[in-house]
Image 1 (cartoon, rainbow, N blue to C red):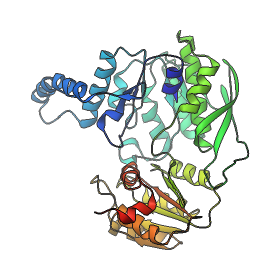
Image 2: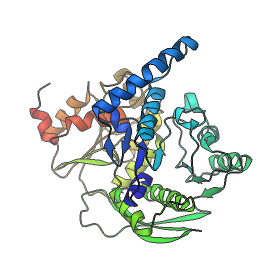
Image 3: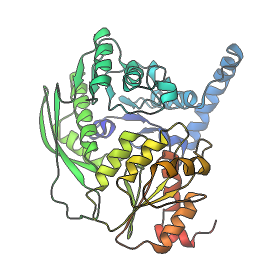
Length: 392
């Protein structure tokens, strides 16, 4: 959202995100354009001798894949002379590769239990790791409203003399939505944002879900702070940027009859946001295809989904070794789920089974992992029924 707003204001904007859906270059775009094949090859050639020297100097501590991609992205931004780079942290914050930058503003969207093996068991511990991105005297915007993690962020911001802007305190978010012309589709919201920099009303979002109004509010305040740094960003650019912002695999509609949605939700907060968004959709039956990674709290995710969905299809994705096995899913499901569930060998098989019987007024949702969502997106490129016709 921040990148699209700055683009709408006429700036050349680098956007660094992870993971990617199809191509590595998706992780570092400039005004929504990926690097060319030749540019990537040339930059890799630049990095090879550097990596070789580092591997020789620090034996047993090889440069990681994410560190290499970070270097590639930032080298691309530097060579392309971007006006602004918007950098998404990979994991945590304090020890993340991206944390070597000197930002104009930092943003912490929310805190949820995720990657607990690396980030800590409590929300306070996780918040402290996330707050590691806060730099001395650099403004930080926080959408965290739970007391314990919010306090951890405030304490670190205070120690570093970083001006703190908090949702519900220094700025306000007021979501609302108009009566939908399509009750069979997830609802997109409007939002009013009020801060010390001014009030903007009826900002229209293109991504469905009330949770996106909070993300949009943080992006608006970040843009207002960029204005304090000399960027020329007006109200119309903010409106245009928010309306054009769209993230792949976030409540992405792949088919309409039946309604097929893929979503990369993989922790309790994002799964809850997905279910909350889908509650407004008028359907007769709700199917969910679920797979996730071994470092996730699988029982918690399934418990939340159990409150909304009618039929579970538990599977494993084939494009990453971190997937939870069918045996592990079976053990957890037998303890957690109260709705009918089946084990299916792979996402394609699950989609085929549903395609054979699903009615036009039903919902099919694929969620639990970015890897699963990406795999399903390829399978559903031509709609659900086409999965039946597709050869292995």
